[in-house]
Image (cartoon, helix red, strand yellow):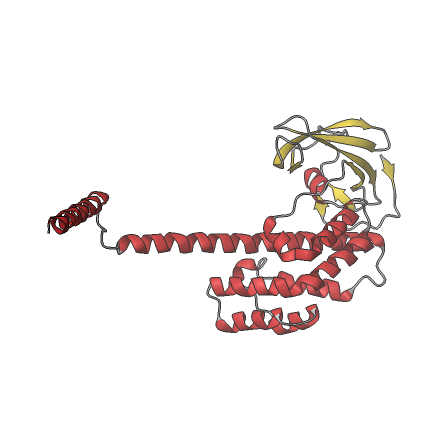
Length: 307
């Protein structure tokens, strides 16, 4: 295990499995279980990530194993989908000891470099900016922090009106205070993200908050400070967290919308069952009536011809 006392490492401490699935490329993290208690490399962790194999195309459990790792802790870790046993992903890993004897790990490569699919709900929000968002994802996964940050900021600024419009509709659906609905409606009509945030203030449906925090204001505060004076590694961490916050917010919005729609349908059907409509004539009755009318018409026609 090599040592480096000059590294400025951010905390907190990560588990190796979480590091593999969540840490951006070239970001450095203290990992608690990279080595076992004997200082040896244990079997790789079991992780959950997206399988792009034709038989899966969804989140699956992956087993991991070291392909090759040298005494300097430079190695390759291969992950295999437990379901299809066909799709594999390989990480290039470097580890070292810092001045405090912590084990620091970074990912310097992933193959194949494939982004997880974006939910249909978020695609609707992103609209014409979807390709720009994907460019940001590719920049992030390639370790280009400044580029990823810039792309994500552009996407959010371009789509802020649609985002606040959907937040307003959710506030109406969950029967939020009218002041909250009006504030979010006003925000959706603003031309800039900063004006929209000012109009919305602290208003956001409780179901979309994170432990009481408003993700929209947090994202805005980070974007408004910009990247001046920050290096690529700092921007990479910020970009990664912006994407995760945006993905999670859209998932919460989708869940609330889906649940409310399902509940509305269920209640409508229950109410209908309490007040059933009067029974209409049966097919047999309708058929008999038609037959009688036809018979009477024939009799009338016969009588006319007799005259």
